[in-house]
Length: 638
Image (cartoon, helix red, strand yellow):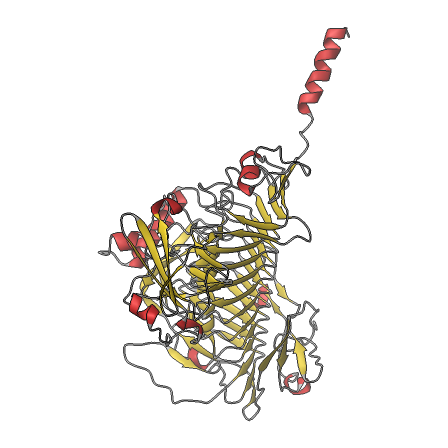
């Protein structure tokens, strides 16, 4: 071979060698004119995002970064993603707020802040009203802006008078906090914010105001394979995230694929903290814009448009949201319409959702998903969230496993107009209302139901079901109710009330499974234990009824740990006729005609307990714990 040929081969080999992944550094003492090295870091995360390519890592060092990170691109694959991370051991904040120091006394404890139009650049959250499909402002306006005093959000009011003379808001979970109020008005030149600081001087405290509608959110769909790890993110002027709208969260994936959101603290979003939801092109608040058609019809149309826009495993979803702490938002801790398909939501601590209660709507909860196809929701702790888990439409192939739910005032789990199969196993449902079931085709195994159950058909809405492990539609139908499986659960009763059924309300509510006796589709039940007046399903063979036993479940929080007191003798409930729950035993659903199986289509066996311990193969223990053990009468559950 001549020298020229050798040179060409050498040059070609250099072209074929993959470029080494780069690491860019960001620090509060950096400069965006630097090259982003550890010695010469960037000043903003946005500058690092501007140049990062698939496979690169962005390391952000200690400090507060007041910016919205808008990734202009994503990674190329799961193994070649773009990673944004807080430097190990560093406290890194991304905030959608700005500190204000120009407050002037107005009257009494009330101060006023005057912000010129130029302060807000292209977005003013104090002139942006919260609105959208299924939003209920409770008869008054609300804005996406917020005021924070030393990190704690104040309550927006509708008039200056209510700031000067505040009264406790009756529905707030913290009524004393609701007297720390603010009011806003704007004219052509400025925005004015009045706030009651109860004797504190806001110029000597840390007072922050929302100015950005998100902290981390792409401007376009399809920014795939991004990892966000280890940050503290807070203060976003988020808009109502209806399932028929673009869902912008404090952090959101914007109709992308393959994100990993892990080990973050995410808090203080006006509406939702994390969104895995849809984009704008398939419809944005379409019901509000055309109320002549009902909301269910509009959402079915959104689904068809999403399918035309390639809503599938190949293009959307498959996210991982794990080990985050999520709190202080008034709509949802994690929300997602259609965009959460095939995702894994695990190990998150979600609390203080919808605690102000100044507005409401049909899209609220610790986790609220539409279209949770083959989604795993496992080992999450959800409390003080109003509604804990809300699986709304198309929860097919979903598995809800080993979650801890308590102190939720609406319910722990709401399954709405789903047709199955979906699986609910090894959960602790400890709020007064454990399960609100407006669905069919669910399999419930080894759960602890400490509250009541509501069963209701839904005969006014046609909703979809799908081909196995796919977004492809198989059909649409009404929800008759029933067709459930309840095996090896513990039901704890309470004060029984006479069953009353209004002729126009087909719902039944009570303790135990008797509420399914009147459903159109029969259910299956076995191996269940009923305590303290909880009543079994009418066709259940050999239920274990301990009518006078009171398990008296009680949650005890100690520092970062959670314990459950449960006055149940394990030897007594071991007499239940429990058998291992498997794909073969569960059978197929009546509507979708599908079996209960793992995500990859392999047979399912619920052979491990809440803690992941193996269950007895011959005679498993009923309830979430296979071998209950306690210290001082307490079982550590978190």
